Length: 113
Length: 115
Image (tube, rainbow over the protein chains, first blue to last red):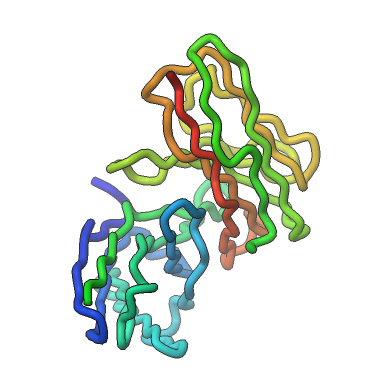
């Protein structure tokens, strides 16, 4: 199976909250990341959380980490049409002397009026 | 603007052509990466360079040949590609592979179409 798993699609109404979930496998990952990819563009770092934290809030974004279950979520409050994009979860396990990120398949967030 | 640029942004090539993709980072990073992003498939890590040395090569066909002449530049040389190689090719850089907080900065990608 994949190292980082995400659901592929999420559809929400404008103004509602969006919650994108991710599970990862490597408990040695000290940082976990969320990236955003808009159409025709590369991935953009959105936010991250350090593994000794349970929660991190940054304006409309809230990241929750359940280290016991290896579960990460990204909540977007008051979702806007401009939030429509693909959201990638990433872990950075330590392997072979290097920290190389592993990405999930991405969740396509569709925001409709 | 992430500090990572890629050229060209779009490329159409025949199966017998030879072309190169270029990536440049202006962030002073030591690590650079090539990824392939195809529709309905996970992001595929192709190559990783640290201080101009290749540290990872994930079973990529030899028709893809990377080159890292210095820590700011990364190339992907393409020859005799197949239609299934059509994809978005993303370049990324990060500070250092030896750091746990190794977040990546991505370029906008090159959309490659092989005819």
